[in-house]
Amino acid sequence: MKKGISKHFFSRYKFEKSEEYKKDIMAKARFINNANKRFLKGKGRKMLDVGFGNAPLIPCLKSKYDISGVDISKENVAKARDNYPELRFFKADMRKFKIDEKYDMIVSICAIDHGDDLRKELEKTIKNMANHLNKSGIIMFDNPLSLDSWQRDSTNEYDGKLIGEKGTKYSFLNHRQCGEPKNSGFTYSVSIKANSKGISAENSDIFTAKYLIGVDQVKAIAKRNGLKAYVYDGWEGKSPKGGKFAKEPVFILAR
Figure: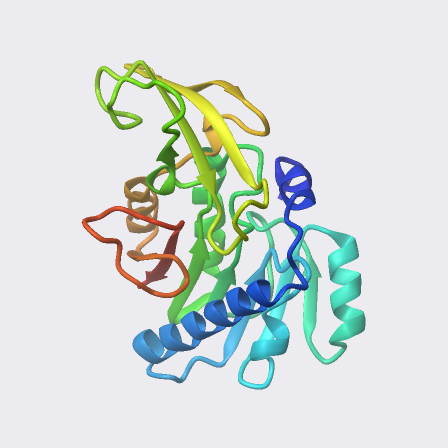
């Protein structure tokens, strides 16, 4: 997608070679396999990896699926073509790519929130993905910037109401992404002001509230595009306890 938070975001994501990172990728691979079994009865074979980055999923899944990839970075595409010449990779914007194929599964990991305005762009992205699905296909993606997985920062004062609730003045939040090591410094704080006109960011180190979107908003987007949203608490495939998320929401969108 367009240049947004992604450069800063990944410059602080330092554990790609760690054992914890490998376990995280394997959890995502298991999630995809389980989704295939549940929604496609294990018959899903064609997979599109959207925003594949350094292509961590491919070594785990290429023996089982016919994988293609889309990424906005020409460097990522060139590297993937060198490493996996038997597969197809396309340089394209996830909102606009057009491929002359349909897929059983379209997957996007830690990428769908890398645009300039998630609230405006997510529907375009989901609609475009849906246009590339086979009749019974599914879409899978996470949302590290979901309102539902943010936590209040206990070191700050706040008015005790959830973001977006009527009458909210200020809330102070921080967020740590699923799978990252403790004490890595990968934590962001943002001061949010919510009023009758909506949500705005008073200050933030890397982004504003236009990146924040809730589960209910994603469900509404899915419904408008003829899809039903199934929501999990992280890539381990657990259900959110009491409707609350300890990690980022992960979605499966199915027809």
